[in-house]
Image 1 (tube, rainbow, N blue to C red):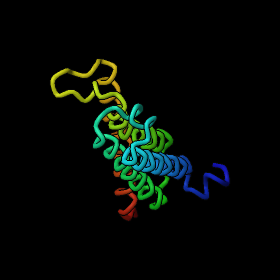
Image 2: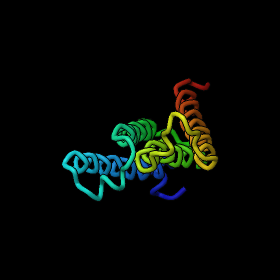
Image 3: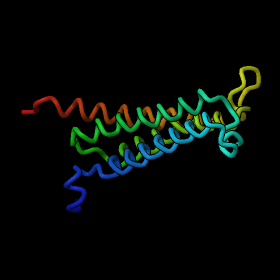
Image 4: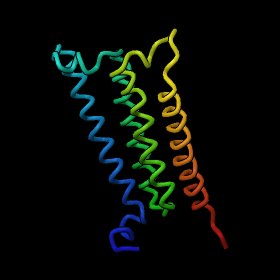
Length: 146
């Protein structure tokens, strides 16, 4: 394990991912401000429901907080758990972003295309595996093994 990995208990990918998703949340916040002021390019880009953009913003913030919380425990996690958390955090939040950009994905009457269903289920599985497995590692670390 490198000195940098030791410093972060091997979880440097978590802190980097959290920083990226926090920046994404800030970018989306500014996009919402621009939409409220009627900035034309933004109205064309985010053609879907404003609430979906708000959900994406909140979800990026939530995922950032969850990743930072797990990171703060300094419990070493296997690489596949760390990457599942970071990738899952992005894909989960991006589902709302996709609906904000492509309103057809958010229709109550027309089913979404197969690629979106695949992306949705892959995201749910990846996110659940990453955060679920991390929770198990953190919980296990609280028990004294003698």
